[in-house]
Structures are given as structure tokens and as C-alpha cells.
Length: 515
Image 1 (cartoon, rainbow, N blue to C red):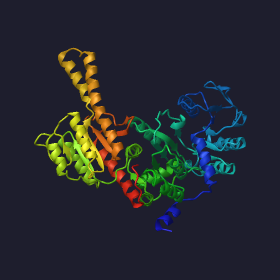
Image 2: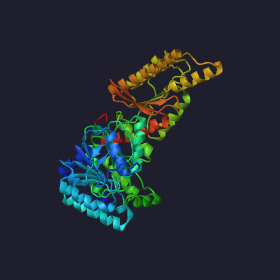
Image 3: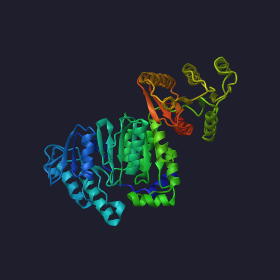
Image 4: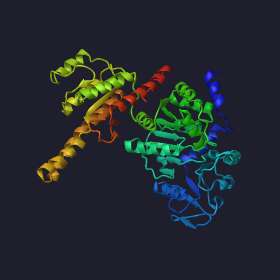
């Protein structure tokens, strides 16, 4: 056993596990249930039972929903039941949002009903001290003896967009996509889903792990990693109770798809906060970093970086190496981006004589003749597309950053506003519409070509907006795939840097995949 494994075993407490095949089958009922019972369902706005019921129904879930509340006959138009045992027919998933002291009896009812999957929203367990820890042990024992798995307690919920299921207390509206998110903080998980949605990154699955009384981060990593729909996984981790299981799962998964992780509790203050948050033992930050490196997990430092890197890696190819080609509308961007590349361990190869000869015929005589290629403000879309083609087919580069080629529509809107202010009258709406369409078509010409070339060459192409007011997003080109569109050069470089870390790990195993 390696020294790292000895340390991992020392800081992690193993718990008894049911047969792995059964566990994965039962986890599937959390994310693809045919029917759901909500224990503690309510019509009182603001209560967890209200929020969960409203979000599940409003989110488009098409299975059967059974509210459980002994004081109500109807909740949100659905028949309510005094207890889960009174529900006719089978229940795949029980979601529990009642006081902690009542949860053990609810678990016993679930076992008696033959339910194999549950989610416990309720807090007041291990994170609160000894009595809470004792109560958590009670419900875990009931579940283990009853052949039932559960997420939580103290979880904010789960999401399965491929099943139209928002089992959350927060009314999020993620779109389906290739990213799976596992978070040991509900609030950070909610924020990550929101960021991903606004950036256009589809989130197929999300799990807030809560206290991890039964289902651990390692179990959910194993489950999501097995799903064909998942292209990349994002993890927010405060601590681990199953270090060996986590390492084993990560090693298997990272050889097929990227896993990106943020380890919180890097300082003594953060470690103490993690302990009070979920009762998690944060462990040594250095040990976790070593674990991540050995397992091929890409480590990041902030939640926003986690979303950017994981979202990118779920949508665009992983470069084959660290060589970057840059095209820029202006020189300053190129200088800054070149600096960031070198600081990040990326290499900018000099242009070949063939490329210089080609561009000498197309650019003004004072162009810089180097990489980054400065187009000296030339805005002709066909010229820009030509340069993009040159870089994409140049064997000396593995990824491309295009600076300022898109994002002009914001400036056009401002220009129209200023013209109307000076002239004192509104522009003809048909003229405004024609101008906006023209700018939009020009930008879509660039995006379409970028998507085509990215698909053809398996080289990531990242566009950085001309305007700081543009929204960071994924541009989807139906025929060719997705192009990443960011607001700053350093974000583009940072994503490529982390992608290259993953590429080096794959190279160590002789694995040659584009994602």
C-alpha cells in the first residue's frame, strides 16, 4: 500500500455497504423515480414541504406525486395521505421534510412500504452535535437493515433534468446537458447550477450530499460517472468519509471523462467552518491535492472557476497538447493573453513562413507577423474566418483563442442610442432591425465556422467577447456542436490550462480521446 493510501485510510472512516449493484439500482430511483412521496408536503408558502412540492410539480415531473400530511386531504390539487403506508401502489422515492425527531418513524414506514430510496431534507443531525449524531446513526441503521439508500440528511435536494425532476427547495431551472454536479454545500450547489444555467452549460444531474449518512460523494461519483449522458463532473468537497471508495471510483471515471474538484477548508478557519457546516472532517488540504493528482482529478480554487472549467469540459474537446494559437482584433489583448499563457505553462509557437506569406497578402503591411496574430482592427468577417481556418489546420497548435471577433451587438445598441440622442428622433425601426440582423448574422458566421472547425479538428476554439457587456455563454450550432464564448482572456487561458492538466493525465495511460 502506498504512503498516500495509508494516509487516506487514516483520515477516512469506512461504513458498511450493501451490494454495489443494488446500491446503483436504488440510486437510480432518486434520479429517475416513477413515483414520489413527499413526507411533510404543505400548502404554506415558504415551508420546505411547500417549496419541494411546488418545484417538483412546476418543474414538469410527469410521474405520480403523493403528498403526505396527516392534517390535509388535498395539497396543490393532489390527494394527500396521512402516512406513506396509506398510499395506494408503489413508491420509488420518499422525500422527507419533517422535524428531525420524526424522521426515524418515517424511515420505518418507508421500509414497511418497500421503498428503497429516500432523500432527507431535514437538518438537526450530525452537524448539530452528539444528540444529532446519535439520531443520524438511528436512521442510517434503519435504512441499512431495510435495504434502502438515502441522500442527506441536511441536503438541499437533487436535480435530474433528463427526467424533468427538480427535487429542490430552490426554484432552479437548469437545462439538460452533459455536466453532473455533486456538492457538499447546498447553497454553493444552488449557485453553481444558477451560474451554469446563465452561461448556457446544461446540467444533467445535481446532488447536494448533505451529511452523507449513507450515500457518500464516492457513491454519487460512481453513479454519475456511469451515465452516458454525463460528459464531465464537478465536485465541491469539504471532507470525505470514504476516501478509498472515492479514489477507486475517481480512478475509473477519469480515464473516460473529466472530474473537476474544488476542495474547501484549505485553511484552519475553513476547516473549522466545514466541521460546523456538515460535521465533515476536512482532512489535510495537501493530502487531498495529492489524492486528486493521483486520481486524475482536475483541481480548481473557486466555485466560479469550477463552473467555468467543468462547464467547458462538458461541451468542448480537450486539447492534445499545450500549444495555443491566438488571433486578436487588437494588440493589447494579444499581449495580455500571451502573458497569461506563459504563466500557465502554455506555449505559443511562432508562425510558419507559409502562414506569414499567406497573411502578408491579406493584412496591412504593418501587421505583427507573429503569434498572437494581430488583425490590426480589420473587421472583415471573411478575413477573420480565413485566419481561424489557418490556425485550426495548423499542426503546430492544439487550441485556439479568438479575441474580439464577436460581441459587437452591444456596441451597436449603444451606437443607435447615442445617434437618437444627438438627432433628437428615433431611428426607423426597420433600419434598426436590419442593422441588428446584419451584426447578428456576421457573428453567427464566425461561430458556425468555429463550431465546424472544432468538430473537424477536435481542437477547442474559445471566443472572447469584444464587449465586456456580453453574456458568457455556450453558442450551440446545431450541425456542428458548441462554441465557448467568454468575457475575458484570462478565463479562456485558465480553461485551456486545466484542460491540459487533464490531457497530461490521459497521456500517462496512453488514452487519446478528444473529451
